[in-house]
Every structure is written in C-alpha cells, then in structure tokens.
Image 1 (cartoon, helix red, strand yellow):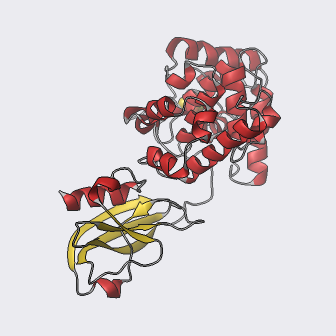
Image 2 (image 1 turned 90 degrees about the vertical axis):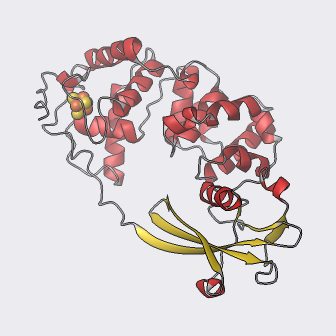
Length: 343
Ligand code: SF4
C-alpha cells in the first residue's frame, strides 16, 4: 500500500526562495544529463523541444533520432537548405510530421530574416513559425538563461498538485492561472536550472500515475491531499475505431505502387501504400492485417496483394523501384507493413 502523502508545512508563494532552492538543489545533484542540457546552442535546444512535444525522451534519444538529426542539420541554415522530402525522411519514426514542417519553416525564417543567426530576444523567437509561448520560453531560458516562465504538461501537473488546484487546467482561466504561478515562482537567478528542474520533477517524482511524494524534494510545499486525480481536465476524447484498406500492388518490372499524401493532410508529402475502398479489395488476397494508433484513432490496416492489371495508378500515385523506396519518407505503420510484405 502506498505511503500517505506528507502534509505541506510551507507555501510556494510565501516561501518562494526556499521552494526554488529546494528544487534547484535537488536538480543540481540528481538532474539527468541530456544532450540538449549540455549545450547553450538555441538551435539544438529548439530541435529537442519540437521533437519532445509528442514523443518520449526514450524514443528521441534511444532510437538516435535527435543525434542523427543534429549531425545532418547542425544549424538552421543546414536544415533550410534541405528539401521537405529529405526532412520528412529524417523525421520518419517520430510521427506528427507537422512538427518537421514547422521546424523547417522556422529554419528558413532564421536563415532569411536573421542571416542564419538564431534570434536573441524572446519576442523574435516567439515570432518564428510554429513556435508557441512555451517553446519560446523554453529556448530563451535554456539557451540564454533568460527569466521566462514555462508551462508544459509536466509543469501543469506539478502546479496543479502543489496548489491543490481544483479547477480544470484546459480552460482559459485554468491556463491563465498556471502561467501566473509560473511567473510568480520564477527566480531571476538561474532560471535555466529552475525551469529544467520543474520539468524534470514532473517527469520523475510527480509523474501522472504514480507520484512518489515520500521522496519528492518539494513535498513540504505541496498542498494537495491526493495527487492522483490532478490535474483536472475535461474527459478524454473517446477512441474512434477506423478500418483502412490498402493494396500492395506490383507491376511486371517489380515496382511497387505508392501514394503520396496531399498538401493539407496530416502526412502531406509522405508516401504510403495506396488506400482503396473496401469494394476494391473484395477480390484480392489479404496479405497482412495490422493495427496502429494515431491521436484518437485506433486504425486496423488491411493490406491486399494486387497486380498492375488489377490496380491502376490514381492521382498522386506512382510506381517505385525497390531501390528507391528506402529513401522515400513513409509513415511508420506503412514502412513496417511494407517491410513485412517484402520479407
Ligand atoms: S510528487 Fe508531486 S504531488 Fe507529490 S509531493 Fe511532489 S509535487 Fe506534490
């Protein structure tokens, strides 16, 4: 049985200095060392922030995405000069490809409007395409040690619990309150370490499902009686089940038919196995059935083997040789399905 949560003896807003010190002291002794914490390069920090928006650290680092990306595009200018197809290919496996397109647009804006030099001021960073309040604050504080408040999902969870916030955080008033606390608690000295510590507290002790309050470095400031229901949010969107039917069509030259996603679609520019209506697949042999999740959708993908005379190329579809397929950007579910079919 988990130990009862320790009672607060101090308040973060009344003992702000002590709160900051407790947090930063813990971080200095036990904070994790990631490549983006080992640098003051704002570009390297921006790339990490964008990658980590919807992807776990274990994937970003463990599968080599971050280091590979930085080796290919060590400066905004390097990324600005790459084509969108090259970037989507490098981003493959991280998902949420809009992030890659936004980062590309930011790299181009830095190259065009700032002569390739990363902007120094918070307002200039915030004005880059695809950069919101949180990301601009994170880059300004982590790279330049500017006193900019940040609120991401981890910080929101920590604040909700510290202040026993019994309001929903996904409302205008709830969000405003979180940013106000972030400003009130922010130290002038070492905002970089403080912001890093706050985020790491949310990733470690103050985790979503099993907060470790007994060992938490700021437990004496934390006013909630039971952290697990916090933060309050509107009920999670229900998962929607979707069926997709795709063809694995080959022609007499051994080429494979692929479909490029249109502009404006979530996976614009990526190549995938051509999707068809269920009716088209009725006379074809089912070769593979797999499932994947994307946002609130749970997708069952069925792939049917076909030949050129049964499946003609439609708009945005082309025949590709096996050699060329490896260099095309492709969503992970399609890449896995194709590799399995070819094996
Ligand atoms: S782990 Fe979170 S909920 Fe628990 S004491 Fe620390 S800040 Fe509060």
